[in-house]
Image (cartoon, rainbow, N blue to C red; front, side, top):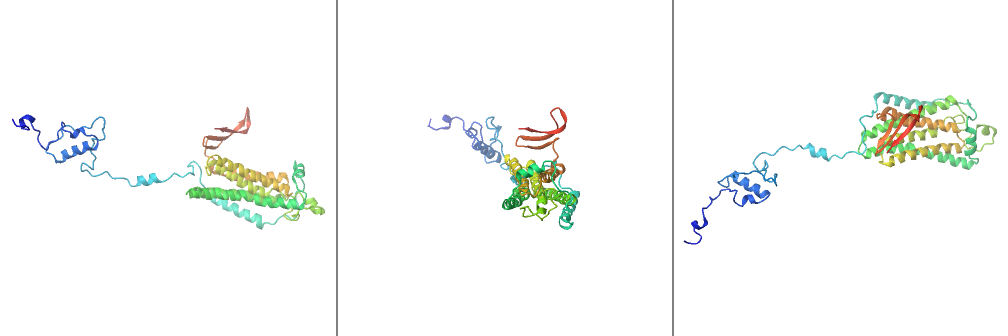
Length: 353
């Protein structure tokens, strides 16, 4: 018998048939799938007896719809665009009230009243209140400067320092959110700023005329012994301190905004509040050093400013949190709660971190 005869090789397998015993199903991954697809599409005249996916590679034996001739599933074109949109760092909390229509009206009316009282209303032409009260005298003796050059230097410093917190308020309320591409937040903060400054300005200007308090140097100016370079300027507008009121309004707004929103991020927001309060306090001290105000004038002006700058945003907009909570961010929670110790009166500040 010749070598290579049919009888020596055994029965021949039919050509073109896909056989499990062949080497096609021994390959792994995509090769196995291609073999199965070729048999099913008629390139071979046989069929696959069992095309079940291997337990070790279940995904490899699965034929995709595109390979089987089926139409591909439609792709939602909006999904990549939505996923590509970055999340803004500064977000308006949906629990907070945005500026209401009535607030637009009251803020505009307050601003107009402020301008009329300050520029149109006739200033007092005689003092209605002269002299110190409470602790005014010892504080004045301790702080006031007694040279003309020293007083002038303190005056100039107070003018420039009083501009810091209002300008910082504009930057942090408008520029910082706008840089984060969040114009809606910038608009809301700008409206709150206008509301607070309008109120503090109206209250301060009205008290000038209502109280008509003489400046601390009033008696010396009348006697001709004062070194005050502004002896006859606004002689009856000592109460309250307008510069301190404006500076503290800005400080209150900065504390409110940075406490509610991560304008700077992390501990820098708390630092911004501390810095602004320090600047506003410095303005008040400089006004007393220049002998333009008593301590009671400065304290009252500071109270008016802080209540307007911090109180209005918190009460009308930001105060939508658990009772007394004023800040809860970066693992730090600060809250003001009623009572202190065992007494039901007063308030206490709690911090958890």
